[in-house]
Image (cartoon, rainbow, N blue to C red; front, side, top):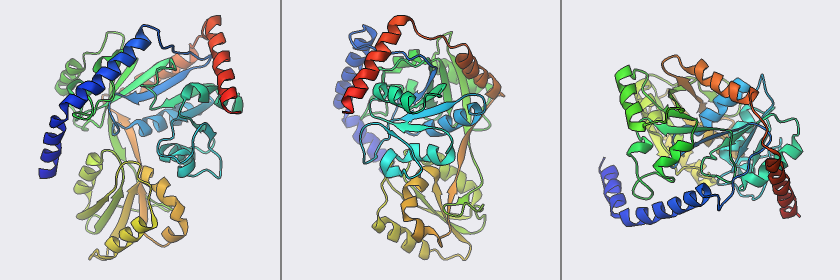
Amino acid sequence: MFSELFLKSFRILLFPFALLYGLGVFVRNLLFDLRVFRSTSFALPIICVGNLSVGGTGKSPMVEFLVSKLKQEFRVAILSRGYKRRTRGYSLARESSTALDIGDEPMQFHLKFPDIPVAVGERRIEAIPQLLHDRPETEVVILDDGFQHREIRAGLNILLTEYGNLYAHDFFLPTGDLRDQKNSSRRADIIVVTKCTESLSFQEREKLLMDLRALPQQQVFFTGLAYGQPYHIITRQPGVVPEDGELLLVAGIANPKMLKRYLEQRTGEYHMIQFPDHHIYTVEDLNAIRRRFGNLEKSARVLLTTEKDAVRLLKFRNELQELPLYVLPVRHYFLFNQEQQFLEIVRNFITQFKKPEPNGKKELEKTAATAETGNR
């Protein structure tokens, strides 16, 4: 509690830097709005999943939700930046790919949906033509964390905001968590309030709607996070969260609050080794985890980690074979029976998609040529 109060006080002192950051964001958005900077459309449906803040809103589970629901009807591909990978440029996930090659979240998508193309690239505007060249059968591209990448004009923008930290109540980095202007939310077609409590009332829902001030054409949905059955990181055999045992949580994610709350309600005693978001695990980290786990006193003890951390730990496959390290999956669920309404909007966007005008085609050809030149 003291550390949280100290951090909050320290961030307030950084207010002047937040104003400068906000000014930079405002100018950049203005240049796009005035069409000084150009946005490009593509001749296929692109669904963008993003947020206005840094991390922790549930983008990865939302991408997985969309893929799981759409892949039976459409040929879906995922495009991500590949944050914290040790490579650069465009790359298409292959059987031999690792989290260091393509990033932890894309690797998570690749392992969960091996039949779905997963590509990464810092410049999405160049990566899309390359992805379509590699996988010309693609019918829909899901753009992971692409809301700020305005070089691409996505056909459907899904904006996520966390129930406990609405963008409407936030401020620019480093004082707050915003990396974009609040009024950038106007570009969203769908707004999803994530990590809601299961018991969210209609009165609370109405208050959230008032806080968000969504435009008449914007649809607002509410989701919670549900944790599934743990599975062993190597053998994938199912496991359980021990109610009376002792648990050691290993996590390097942006916002572990909900996960910690879940464990507090379901296990007798748990400890946590917390790493930074997107942490790249070392041998020293693995040894520290083993030592900490060995010091647990109860006989019923288990190691637990997130799916995002698991893909970064898999490089220690041989060492993890005998450890009781289990992965806890997570997924979105919709409140107020709105899942089908949400999916209907997404499906209608795909099936009713109209290709851009001919000048848009010229922009696409120009972009593809630029990407090809950059690879030489």
